[in-house]
Amino acid sequence: MSYQAETPFDSIEGSHEYVRMLAEAVNEARRDVEAEIAAAEQDRADRRKEALLLVAYNLAKLNLHITSSRRILNDLRSLRRLLLSERGLEPDQSGVVSGEEK
Image 1 (cartoon, rainbow, N blue to C red):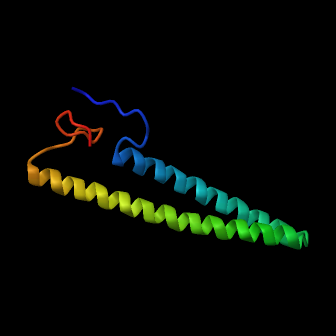
Image 2: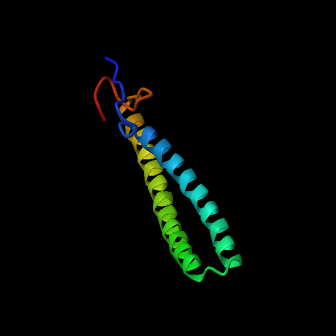
Image 3: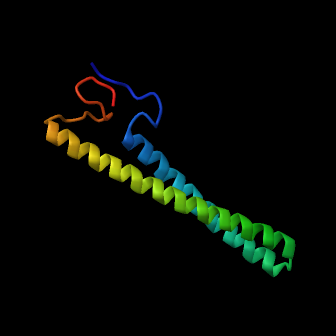
């Protein structure tokens, strides 16, 4: 019996990939905001600069949470591999063991 993942979150690997792409998007947004901050500074738009600094701060916090999530997913993946090797089982590519959902 083959299990088909319905969402990116049906496996640890799928979730890890999603979080990786989210991290890329956050980093891109951070670069864009930094450029906007520089432009606001050059235009002497103080209120706009303050708002953008707040956006940059929140993106930095989000980046920390995403980094933490990636580490947790890595830990879960490692623990699953350890537990499955102790039980003598091997997951298929979807993370399912012997036709059972994880």
